[in-house]
Length: 115
Length: 113
View 1: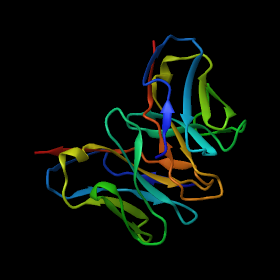
View 2: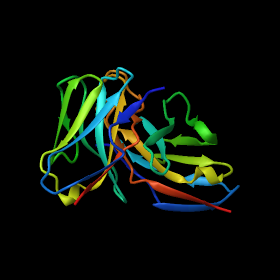
View 3: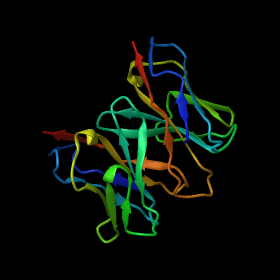
């Protein structure tokens, strides 16, 4: 079974802090994704990556950056946390780009509160 | 651009009753469609996916979905609801760029005795 592990289930940070959310997958997947989930809005894509050191903006990248130095690890960075970034963050991974119709596999999420 | 619309943010059914969760899609190319389930305090789990091999797709936990091109729909059904089916359900479409998904806003299913 694919395992996607997010480093924290719950996290509380203060406004202005730099926040790191870590995600690791164990299936050698090329593709990795970061979403945020808010009530009534579903999942919205923040950033994704098709390969090491590659990144592409999703639908809501403002206020976020990412890092992918190793294939199995994809980090989401909140450069200067703000209260409107309080949310559930979900990481996912999937098989390579040229194989369509491959499902994404999700971690259990990190519930982040910015005070 | 691809998109999905889930009608009904909350659906309540009695245990043993039919479950019907609606999803309509918009796509300029043949779509790849997915249903995911999210139990409380967990990530998303794949229920089923449309592969174009068959219009009726069977998934886990007794769920199935039927792809209807003429109606641009991919509704999720289960003949008999169980208490353990209470969760949030998301429909998703593969959005052009392979593997990049666009999700609906979700439907929370409540199952009552």
